[in-house]
Amino acid sequence: MSEHILSTVSQNTGFLILQRPAALNSLSLEMVRALTKSLLAWRDDAAIAAVVIQGSSEKAFCAGGDIRFFYQKGIATIADGCALIEDFFNEEYALNHLIHHYPKPYIALLDGVVMGGGMGIAQAGPQAGVRIVTERTKMAMPEVAIGLFPDVGGSYFLSRAPGEIGTYLGVTGQTIGAADAIYAGLADLFVPSAALPTLQAVLTTTSGKDLRTAIDTVASPVDVAQSPLALSRAAIDMHFAHDSVAAIMASLATDSSEFASKTLAAMQKRSPLMMSVTLAQIRRGATLNVADCLRMERTMVRRCFEHGEVIEGVRALAIDKDHAPRWNPAQLEQVTSSMVEAFFEPAWPAYAHPLRDLS
Image (cartoon, rainbow, N blue to C red; front, side, top):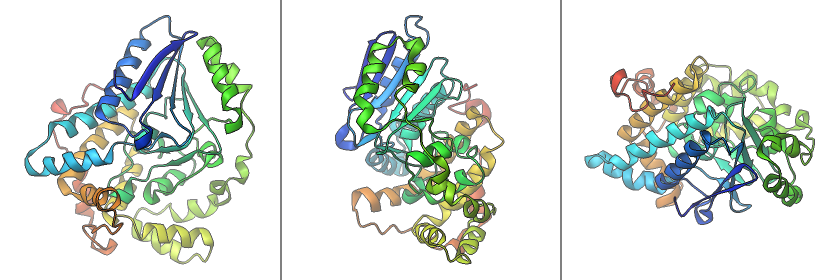
């Protein structure tokens, strides 16, 4: 097992605890493999009735994939090929698929930062998933800020959010809180942080088959109708219904509201190309199942590293930390439909796709 994943069993429940606090529990390949190993073993173990996954500190559940690893291995990929980065995405996406279709209650305690790859290990299928948020939850798919796109199944779960909320979250990369997450269908229950000790006691002393009922007794009601997303819903649905980023930004520019001005300012900092790719991705994802979404995203991530936008984005954010990415192309008007379509061109024949066996 990974030194950054603690795997234990209590009262017929398997516990997975992410223990890499210095990196906000960002996922390494070793962690992906440890999570997969435990989940596969417990899936077929009649003695395990449920699974709980959580972070080890109040700062983060999981802040995503290890972007420094992406940068280091991505440079190698561009130069002479690197199997490790291929392995990371192959195995991470297979893990996302396993979680989505997990046949036992999969309870994710989403306290603190939940972003990118953290969302991938949080969004279990509706038949078995219980996603718990707190007032400390900071949830986002912020990939467009680093020259990537909302992967780990984002094309599936964002495209199924109410109205154009998923489009808004994916194209802008904006962060939301607990009430917003529940309103968007990306979380199920709210538990205040003050009640987390009670929740932990419930999780560790209740039989796995009774966990959902027990968790409900600790949860608190949330007025999602007053969440920021709900209050901005009409504007989101109006502006983000367009099928080009240029049209979305032009629509926002006609709106004098604080929401529109903040959203427009955020989009002006993102990768013009990857905002456009993300919009196309979410539109396509609405008609695909989970496996096909992950296969599409696996092709897209190969194209991202070939293009190099993600390498530049990570450099600006996490390596040089100058927060001045040199996007390619630099201006939205320079992005063409052929540039966008190139991200969806098959990278392998169907029979050779690394995720061809996902069902």
